[in-house]
Image: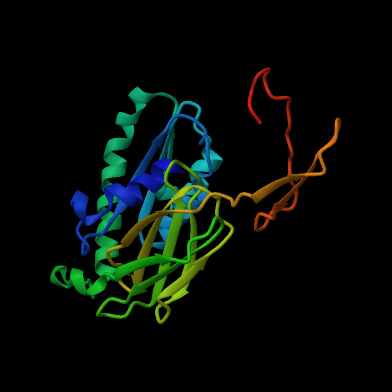
Length: 251
């Protein structure tokens, strides 16, 4: 899952040399079962019009390959027993790739001109009202209004990407149920009939959980004390720890 997300966020971007008007596909090669959820990341790529071919070697899970790959599976899923046998796929895979790219190109005769890239990219992403569990996104729409927006967000240090699909007339979104004190990467993709425009990216961190304040000590006796404090927002329970001060320590 993280590998596919990396491809989307890094390799398929204009900064990495990807051209907006070019057809895009991903070839996934694996020799084992995924250690995280690859289905959501794969679906995000496919929803953006990016075709996925899955090739398994040795202990690859064929059922998982079929979940990740694009349709039709008879053209996009391959499995071999060992790495040297990959050479047997070259001719077949080359033919299928060229044919699929040609078919997609012919189907999308109204390809977006390369010089329209800036017109198809939203701008001015603002992230505001950040709390420990939520944040608010706003952006300026591109000059050419999209059909939809696809917003993808996930923790920068690893995590399952989540996505929200919005109507093209909407240019704001509230993200909720986030993890506190965590850096999030956010991408906004404009979706057109002919494919996805350039993404708009941002990064911010949620706040740490709030702490109780104004601790007060009262009603001291030889074997008890009373504590009071101002409540922490959203807290459902408190853990109170106490220990004797070291000998000679000041109050």
